[in-house]
Image 1 (cartoon, rainbow, N blue to C red):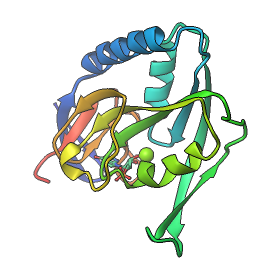
Image 2: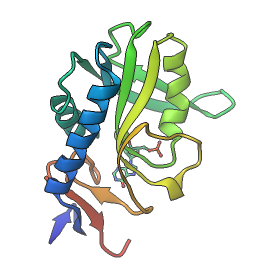
Image 3: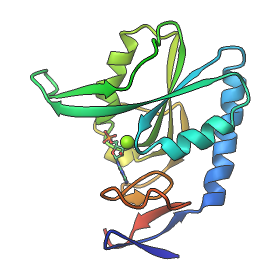
Image 4: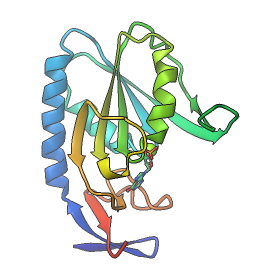
Length: 178
Ligand code: IMP
Ligand code: MG
């Protein structure tokens, strides 16, 4: 099936049933790994909100969830990019934190942000990502709980957008003729 998003054509890549089945598997794994630990899920907005909601519902152990937005700007650090988080209210010191991302592409965002979280001394810090594009990676970042590995193509749907649109598509769609 194809859909038009913001003037570009996309075709079905991972249908919503397949996505949901995989999320149930990730939830089962998290239930095993975090029994009694009251993990804190930290969803990175905007892209992760649908994945975070479904992943969180698939978890049955006691757990909490919060969301933050990351903003990057050109700074004067050695990497050139500074990432700030907006909406980080609770302390993560001593907490078992699971970052929830929509997709790891170059890895730039998490490479810059993870050290800032580590500084706050969480008890543990893991990453759950719906998608990963290993071929596009510039930094060594990997998801501990990964939905699907995929080639370096642009996708929309299930929270992921193309210029703000397409997030509400129930499955994941890849661009045609990238
Ligand atoms: P990274 O810092 O390069 O790993 O980029 C991560 C962010 O880029 C994701 O959280 C997405 O917001 C965005 N992104 C990367 N690839 C795609 C894609 O194929 N579709 C939509 N957004 C993407
Ligand atoms: Mg994102």
